[in-house]
Image: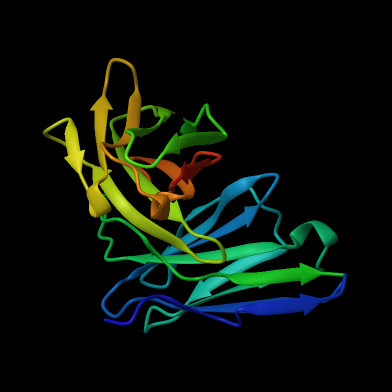
Length: 115
Length: 113
Protein backbone atom coordinates (compact mmCIF):
# COMPACT_ATOMS: atom_id res chain seq x y z
CA UNK A 1 0.00 0.00 0.00
CA UNK A 2 1.12 3.53 -0.67
CA UNK A 3 1.88 5.58 2.40
CA UNK A 4 0.47 8.90 3.49
CA UNK A 5 1.24 11.57 0.94
CA UNK A 6 1.40 15.29 1.52
CA UNK A 7 1.59 18.07 -1.00
CA UNK A 8 3.39 20.29 -1.45
CA UNK A 9 6.53 19.21 0.37
CA UNK A 10 7.93 22.72 0.62
CA UNK A 11 6.20 26.07 0.61
CA UNK A 12 7.36 29.65 1.02
CA UNK A 13 4.81 32.35 1.76
CA UNK A 14 4.82 35.89 3.05
CA UNK A 15 3.05 37.29 6.09
CA UNK A 16 -0.63 37.91 5.56
CA UNK A 17 -1.06 35.33 2.84
CA UNK A 18 -3.03 32.14 3.21
CA UNK A 19 -1.99 28.58 2.46
CA UNK A 20 -3.68 25.23 1.84
CA UNK A 21 -1.94 21.95 2.52
CA UNK A 22 -3.16 18.60 1.26
CA UNK A 23 -3.00 15.11 2.69
CA UNK A 24 -3.96 11.78 1.12
CA UNK A 25 -4.26 9.00 3.70
CA UNK A 26 -3.41 5.36 3.28
CA UNK A 27 -6.12 3.59 1.33
CA UNK A 28 -8.86 2.41 3.68
CA UNK A 29 -7.89 4.76 6.49
CA UNK A 30 -10.77 6.94 7.61
CA UNK A 31 -9.13 9.17 10.19
CA UNK A 32 -6.74 11.99 9.41
CA UNK A 33 -4.91 14.07 12.00
CA UNK A 34 -2.77 17.14 11.57
CA UNK A 35 0.20 18.23 13.68
CA UNK A 36 2.52 21.21 13.73
CA UNK A 37 6.18 20.54 14.53
CA UNK A 38 8.51 23.34 15.54
CA UNK A 39 11.87 23.31 17.39
CA UNK A 40 10.42 25.34 20.25
CA UNK A 41 6.99 23.76 20.75
CA UNK A 42 7.63 20.26 19.48
CA UNK A 43 4.71 18.30 18.07
CA UNK A 44 1.40 20.03 18.61
CA UNK A 45 -1.97 18.50 17.72
CA UNK A 46 -4.06 20.63 15.38
CA UNK A 47 -7.20 18.61 14.63
CA UNK A 48 -8.53 15.19 13.74
CA UNK A 49 -11.17 14.22 11.18
CA UNK A 50 -13.18 11.07 10.76
CA UNK A 51 -15.79 10.58 8.06
CA UNK A 52 -15.71 14.28 7.18
CA UNK A 53 -16.34 15.33 10.79
CA UNK A 54 -13.90 17.09 13.06
CA UNK A 55 -13.77 15.03 16.25
CA UNK A 56 -11.13 16.94 18.15
CA UNK A 57 -9.26 20.21 17.93
CA UNK A 58 -6.07 21.44 19.52
CA UNK A 59 -5.35 24.85 21.00
CA UNK A 60 -4.71 26.81 17.85
CA UNK A 61 -6.33 30.07 16.72
CA UNK A 62 -9.22 30.09 14.28
CA UNK A 63 -6.82 30.97 11.46
CA UNK A 64 -6.10 27.25 11.34
CA UNK A 65 -8.88 25.22 9.79
CA UNK A 66 -9.31 21.94 8.04
CA UNK A 67 -11.71 19.67 6.30
CA UNK A 68 -12.01 16.13 5.11
CA UNK A 69 -13.58 14.93 1.90
CA UNK A 70 -15.70 11.86 1.27
CA UNK A 71 -12.65 9.97 -0.03
CA UNK A 72 -10.89 10.69 3.30
CA UNK A 73 -8.43 13.12 1.75
CA UNK A 74 -7.91 16.14 3.95
CA UNK A 75 -6.81 19.73 3.61
CA UNK A 76 -5.75 22.24 6.18
CA UNK A 77 -5.79 25.96 5.65
CA UNK A 78 -3.95 28.72 7.44
CA UNK A 79 -5.14 32.25 6.80
CA UNK A 80 -3.34 35.51 7.51
CA UNK A 81 0.02 33.82 7.92
CA UNK A 82 2.36 34.93 10.68
CA UNK A 83 6.10 34.37 11.03
CA UNK A 84 5.43 31.96 13.88
CA UNK A 85 3.49 29.68 11.55
CA UNK A 86 6.75 28.54 9.99
CA UNK A 87 6.88 24.84 10.79
CA UNK A 88 6.74 21.30 9.53
CA UNK A 89 3.10 20.29 9.18
CA UNK A 90 2.54 16.58 9.51
CA UNK A 91 -0.49 14.61 8.50
CA UNK A 92 -1.24 11.16 9.91
CA UNK A 93 -3.87 8.59 9.06
CA UNK A 94 -5.27 5.57 10.86
CA UNK A 95 -8.00 3.01 10.40
CA UNK A 96 -9.72 4.51 13.41
CA UNK A 97 -13.11 3.55 14.61
CA UNK A 98 -14.75 5.01 17.66
CA UNK A 99 -12.47 4.57 20.68
CA UNK A 100 -10.07 2.33 18.82
CA UNK A 101 -6.36 2.06 19.39
CA UNK A 102 -4.89 1.90 15.93
CA UNK A 103 -1.56 3.61 15.50
CA UNK A 104 -1.21 6.58 13.22
CA UNK A 105 0.91 6.53 10.09
CA UNK A 106 2.62 9.78 9.25
CA UNK A 107 3.37 11.47 5.98
CA UNK A 108 6.70 13.17 5.23
CA UNK A 109 5.30 16.59 6.08
CA UNK A 110 5.03 19.97 4.41
CA UNK A 111 7.74 22.46 5.34
CA UNK A 112 6.14 25.91 5.47
CA UNK A 113 8.33 28.97 5.65
CA UNK A 114 6.72 32.34 6.25
CA UNK A 115 8.81 35.38 5.32
CA UNK B 1 -5.81 16.60 30.27
CA UNK B 2 -3.06 14.35 29.06
CA UNK B 3 0.67 14.93 28.80
CA UNK B 4 3.97 13.17 28.20
CA UNK B 5 7.39 13.89 29.66
CA UNK B 6 10.65 12.76 28.16
CA UNK B 7 13.16 13.86 30.79
CA UNK B 8 16.26 13.51 28.62
CA UNK B 9 16.83 15.75 25.62
CA UNK B 10 19.74 13.59 24.51
CA UNK B 11 20.94 10.05 25.05
CA UNK B 12 24.39 8.96 23.94
CA UNK B 13 25.45 5.32 23.85
CA UNK B 14 28.14 3.21 22.24
CA UNK B 15 27.20 0.74 19.56
CA UNK B 16 26.44 -2.65 21.07
CA UNK B 17 25.44 -1.21 24.45
CA UNK B 18 21.89 -1.20 25.79
CA UNK B 19 19.73 1.79 24.91
CA UNK B 20 16.99 3.22 27.11
CA UNK B 21 14.81 6.24 26.34
CA UNK B 22 12.63 7.35 29.22
CA UNK B 23 8.98 8.40 29.10
CA UNK B 24 6.39 9.19 31.75
CA UNK B 25 2.78 10.10 31.08
CA UNK B 26 -0.29 11.59 32.65
CA UNK B 27 -3.87 10.83 31.62
CA UNK B 28 -7.17 10.93 33.43
CA UNK B 29 -8.17 7.43 32.34
CA UNK B 30 -6.44 4.38 30.95
CA UNK B 31 -3.83 5.15 28.33
CA UNK B 32 -2.87 4.00 24.92
CA UNK B 33 0.91 4.51 24.64
CA UNK B 34 3.07 4.74 21.54
CA UNK B 35 6.66 5.21 20.49
CA UNK B 36 7.66 6.83 17.21
CA UNK B 37 11.02 7.56 15.63
CA UNK B 38 11.89 10.42 13.29
CA UNK B 39 14.87 10.52 10.97
CA UNK B 40 16.10 13.84 9.53
CA UNK B 41 13.70 15.39 7.04
CA UNK B 42 11.29 12.50 7.39
CA UNK B 43 7.92 11.95 8.99
CA UNK B 44 7.43 9.86 12.11
CA UNK B 45 7.66 6.08 11.93
CA UNK B 46 5.67 3.89 14.31
CA UNK B 47 7.76 1.61 16.55
CA UNK B 48 5.36 0.02 19.03
CA UNK B 49 2.28 0.51 21.16
CA UNK B 50 0.77 -0.55 24.45
CA UNK B 51 -2.95 -1.17 24.53
CA UNK B 52 -3.57 -3.69 27.28
CA UNK B 53 -2.30 -7.00 28.57
CA UNK B 54 1.37 -7.89 28.83
CA UNK B 55 3.40 -4.99 30.20
CA UNK B 56 6.35 -5.77 27.93
CA UNK B 57 5.67 -4.78 24.35
CA UNK B 58 7.90 -5.76 21.45
CA UNK B 59 8.09 -3.65 18.32
CA UNK B 60 10.01 -2.96 15.16
CA UNK B 61 13.81 -3.06 14.71
CA UNK B 62 14.41 -4.90 17.98
CA UNK B 63 12.86 -2.24 20.20
CA UNK B 64 10.71 -3.03 23.20
CA UNK B 65 8.99 -1.00 25.89
CA UNK B 66 7.78 -1.72 29.38
CA UNK B 67 4.52 -0.30 30.69
CA UNK B 68 4.59 0.47 34.41
CA UNK B 69 1.23 1.65 35.67
CA UNK B 70 2.34 2.49 39.21
CA UNK B 71 5.16 4.68 37.94
CA UNK B 72 3.16 5.91 34.90
CA UNK B 73 6.14 5.13 32.72
CA UNK B 74 6.66 3.60 29.30
CA UNK B 75 10.42 3.41 28.72
CA UNK B 76 11.77 2.37 25.33
CA UNK B 77 14.63 -0.13 25.30
CA UNK B 78 16.92 -1.92 22.92
CA UNK B 79 19.40 -4.53 24.19
CA UNK B 80 22.12 -3.70 21.66
CA UNK B 81 22.12 -0.33 19.92
CA UNK B 82 23.19 0.25 16.33
CA UNK B 83 24.63 3.38 14.75
CA UNK B 84 21.57 3.40 12.51
CA UNK B 85 19.35 3.84 15.60
CA UNK B 86 20.57 7.43 15.85
CA UNK B 87 17.42 9.51 15.47
CA UNK B 88 14.78 11.52 17.33
CA UNK B 89 12.40 9.44 19.44
CA UNK B 90 8.93 10.48 20.55
CA UNK B 91 6.69 8.98 23.18
CA UNK B 92 2.95 9.63 22.78
CA UNK B 93 -0.16 9.03 24.86
CA UNK B 94 -3.86 8.94 24.11
CA UNK B 95 -6.67 8.71 26.57
CA UNK B 96 -8.98 5.87 25.62
CA UNK B 97 -11.93 8.25 25.57
CA UNK B 98 -10.26 10.79 23.30
CA UNK B 99 -8.97 11.00 19.75
CA UNK B 100 -6.08 13.36 20.42
CA UNK B 101 -2.51 12.09 20.51
CA UNK B 102 -0.14 14.02 22.79
CA UNK B 103 3.59 13.81 22.20
CA UNK B 104 6.59 14.30 24.41
CA UNK B 105 9.28 16.80 23.47
CA UNK B 106 11.44 14.09 21.96
CA UNK B 107 14.80 12.55 22.82
CA UNK B 108 17.72 12.66 20.42
CA UNK B 109 19.59 9.38 20.45
CA UNK B 110 23.17 9.25 19.22
CA UNK B 111 24.87 5.90 18.91
CA UNK B 112 28.62 6.14 18.37
CA UNK B 113 30.60 3.50 16.57
